[in-house]
Image (cartoon, rainbow, N blue to C red; front, side, top):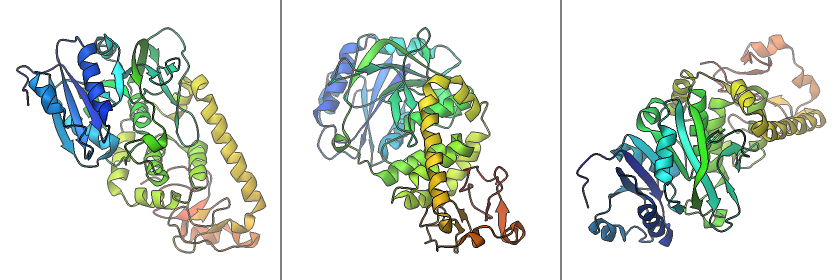
Length: 396
C-alpha cells in the first residue's frame, strides 16, 4: 500500500460490491480526469466475491493515492460511512463505483463546497448508455420517495431538493455535525434523499452545478450488485419519512406502503429499533426548517409528489367509506386502523371485521384504554409511535 506523505485535502470514497471491471474503469477514470493537487481515493470493498478489487495492488505499485478499506455487507450507506471514518481529508466526496468523471470535476466540486452555507454539493450527471440523458439533481417524485431528475431553474449553480447520490461532496465537519449516514439504512435506496433533506432541515443548502459532469451507469434492478427488496427499501423509506414528513403527507406514504405484503415486517423492524427513535429525536432537535418550508421552497419541483400523495389519500378514503366494516381497533395492541387493512399497521395482528356500531363507539369508552391523536383526534393505544389515520408522530 502506498502511504501519503501529507494529509490530503479531499477523500474520494467509493463503496463497491461485485462491480466487476467497472471498478477498475472508475479508478482509472478518476486518475486520468483529476488534476487536483491534494486528494486520496478510498475504495470500500463491501464483501465482494468476484475479485474485482484485486487490481488495486497493481495500482498501489504505480504510486496512486489509493487505499482499500474492507467491510462486510454493510450496504451502500454503511459502506460510505465506513469510508468516512477512515478518510483523512477534510472534504468528503462520494462516488459510485461505476462512474467516469469529466476533467476538472473535483476542482468544480471544491469550488461549490467553499461556500460555508453549502452543506452538500453535486455535479451534472449523464447516462453512460444514453449520453443525451442528463440531469444535475434529484427530487423525491412519488409516494415511495423514488428519485427523479429535477429540471433546471434559475442561474447555476442551482439550489436543489436533493443531490444525485452517484457523485456528491460534503465537508467533514458538516457531515459530522448533521450525524453522517443513517446507520440503520439497509442495502440500497433513499440514502441520498435522506441526507439531502437532513442538510436542508438543519440549516444548510444543497447545490449542484451542471458545468461539469460525471458519466454514470444507471443499472436496472436485476443488474444492481446490491440486492433490492421491497422490505429493505421500505425500511429505508420509512426511516426517512418518519423524520421529515408529518400529517397528510406521512399518512399517504404509510397508506401506500401498507399495500405491499412486506410492509408489516418493515414497520416492525423500525418500531423495534430504539436507536432509530433516539436518532430521530436527535435529528429533529437540530431542525431549523420544517416540511412546510421545504415544500414551499421547492414548490415547482415537489408539486408532482404532492399531487400523487393527495391521490393516495383520496383512494384510501374512498376505500374506507366502502369498507367501513374493517375500520376497527386492533384486538392485540389497541391501535385504530383506518382504510381496508386486513392486518394492524402497528403490530401486524389480523383485524376482525366489525360493524359501524363498533367503529362509532363513544369517545369516552375509547379513551379509557387509548390516547388520542393531537392532530385528528383518532384513538390509539399508548406507546404507538405514530397516528395510523393522519400519520402525526406521537410525542415521547
